[in-house]
Amino acid sequence: MKILVYSTNFAPEPVGIGKYSGEMAAWLAARGHEVRVVCAPPYYPAWQVDAGWRRPAWRQHTWQGVRVWRAPLWVPRHPGGLKRVLHLASFALASLPAMLRQWAWRPDAVIVVAPALLCAPMGWLTARATGAQAWLHVQDFEVDVALQMGLLRHAALRRTALGLESWLLRRFDTVSTISGRMLAHLRRKGVDEARGCLFPNWADVQTVRPLAGPSPYRAELGLADGVRVALFSGTWNAKQGLDVIARAAQHLAHRSDIVFVVCGQGAMQAELEQAARRLPNLRLLPLQPLERLGDLLGLADVHLLPQSVEAEDLVLPSKLTNMLASGRPVIATCREGTELADVVSRCGACVPPGDDRALAATLASLMDSPSRRLTLGQRARAHAEQHIDRDAVLSALLARLAATEGRTDTRTVP
Image 1 (tube, rainbow, N blue to C red):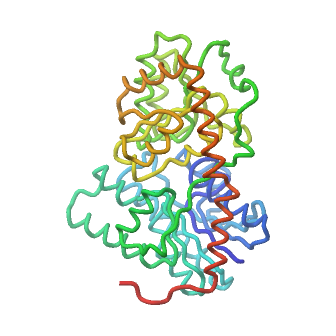
Image 2: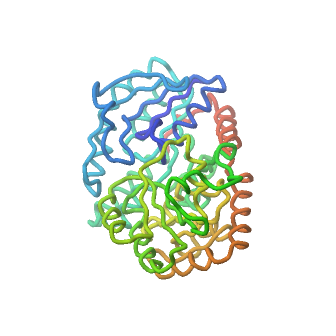
Image 3: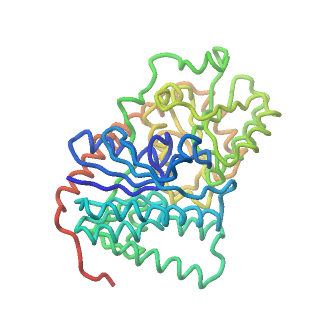
């Protein structure tokens, strides 16, 4: 099968959507499928294009058996609001020539990964022009997040954005998303039940496993035997609500046996560095090599998963999958009744978004109960093995592609 993936972020970016798009493309190519990708140069999570990818702006290369076309995009220094829209629009425009080149190749399936939804029109048009299946995968509900964060304040603008989003969603043969709640939300937006499907973020349960001994990072950070680690690893941006970690660390500054480690990079770097300078129990690590992911996640005695209230049930954080695979308990900041709470409550604990005192108290209680940590960690690992194993998830994707091959829908959708 010939499969075209259209995604702003793509490997070798080691986190988030780029990581999942890359793993999917490489997995499909390794099983004999011809895979092409149109994407941007690596820029995330640092929010700047890597120096080695700035020239030439348009380029082709091969990565793990996948042919990749890179198109440039504008990357704002401080993303947010209109700047983020222009950032995504710049890629949608710059990638048009690369997408048009794929028409002669005639793929069997075109998979558009959103964000960015702005790429959906060209992805759909490419599928229709070539007779391919049109598949849209929704990682984030961009319009809803923008509404909840107050970025679309005018009523007419909100109605227009929601109407255009629904119109686009209903054009695709298949629309997938990463959680049950998000799948139900697609139906509320007008996606027919037969077209919607669950395509969850996965964990490589063979690579990320509970460590048999202490993580090498303990020695590298100079942690004494008795010190327990609360770890956050991921993008440092406002959507994560990361400021709650620094405030919780301040509440537990008297606990010399608890250290907060925050690993990654992103827009909130300056704020976190300022907090680390005044809090001896807060350590920062830069983004770590992907091959060390298992050791990094094994550093945690407890994983921290902060999430802003605006985004808590509109996205299911991709970083959660490998947290679960590492066999460690998770504390998430989310309200009861959200899908994130449903998952985490089985293998950790939930506290209200932004409540630093509740986070500190819950963390201290969990750190003081080794047997409870062990039980919750075992539940986390079992969930990863049973529900989000990479090979099982991607095999289901391939089965759906094969089952619907050659059955594109050319009728007009109201």
